[in-house]
Amino acid sequence: MDNRPIGIFDSGLGGLTCIPFLIEEFPEEKMVYFGDTKRTPYGGKDISTIINYSTQITDFLVQSGVKMVIIACNTVSAISFDSLRAKHPGIPIIGIIKSAAEKTAGLCSHDNRIGVIGTKATVKSGIYDRFLKNIDSELNVHSLACPAFVPLIEEGITESEIMDLTIKYYLDDFIAANGIDTVVLGCTHYALIQKNIERLFPGIRIVNPSQEIISRIRRELAERELFAENSDFVNTFYASDLSEVFTGMIDRIFENTDVHVKFKSFEI
Ligand code: DGL
Image 1 (cartoon, rainbow, N blue to C red):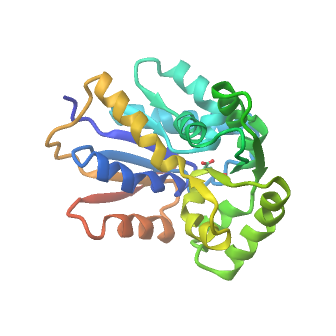
Image 2 (tube, rainbow, N blue to C red; image 1 turned 60 degrees about the horizontal axis):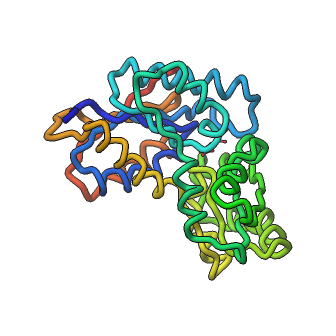
């Protein structure tokens, strides 16, 4: 038993898409979230910048006394996972990509066409392709960077014609030309436009890494006997820029629950 909170972070509000799954699966667990809303997006930044920013956040979470760090960001998982693990060997650090790749490989056969969409950094790293091909070298994997999605989502522009046009701009040709039938949302922000993608491309199967990471977290909590019981810690959501979109999204996640949350602005 371990009542310390779970640390979770993203470049912004994308990582919040893991929270509903977390509270549903682990109602006893408490969390400290950090969204680097002031410096988002990370996806077009240099590797050294992504490592630098994600190290600062991980250091902050570890200093805050968390029992585990969840990297709710594909970009950071793709670029910084090894260096974060090396810097903090004493604490479990979980990336978001492996469980999503395992789920995708489990769903797909060689006849399927997998389309991984993500940030420039994630796509350039080739990490999904590597993980998927390690499981099954015959899988058909295509990848596409969609850099305009994150700024729109951080502005709260999801249910709108602009977003739908942007989705079509990126995905129409990608899906048609490659015969894609399975799309992996390789950026946690994209879970916020999953419904748009389903509406615009009916019949497409979607893998949401924010959901798939839950099984990995359960395994880690169980193996290390880290499950919490009756902690009175208040879930705390830090942002480097406490925007209304960020706080509004958290309010919506918790609106029909009796869970207490607090917001804090923290410039890292
Ligand atoms: N949500 C992030 C991801 O999963 C990063 C988006 C960004 O900052 O570019 O990749």
